[in-house]
Length: 126
Image (tube, rainbow, N blue to C red; front, side, top):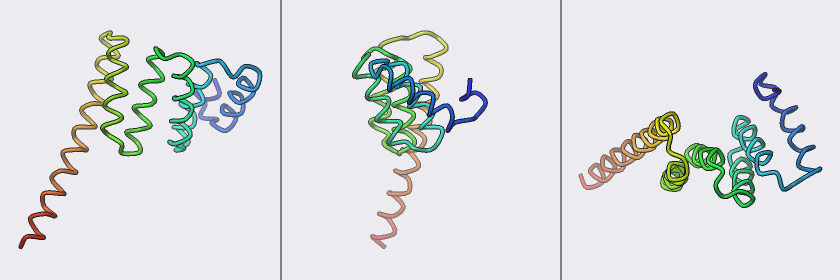
């Protein structure tokens, strides 16, 4: 509820309280990852998603969150792998569309980087 109200600091404190009581709740780690991602703390989000996946390796939402955090860090190949894992675990139409959109974003970013690198290489040859 606090997350939906964009009261992220309070939401994160609530998740921390839950995890102090029971650090084995994969869903709580996942929730913490979402909040940290929204705060721009992508490395912290990755750590939270990884902890969630250690506890519950088939938690599709954590794989998607991991992919989002990796994408935000411009670690596109790793993000692609995380999205692929999410797709392999649960392929329904809504999630497939979401993952396809994320793949498209990654491919677009990689294409832009390749074009830029090609231009730089060409200009250095002149």
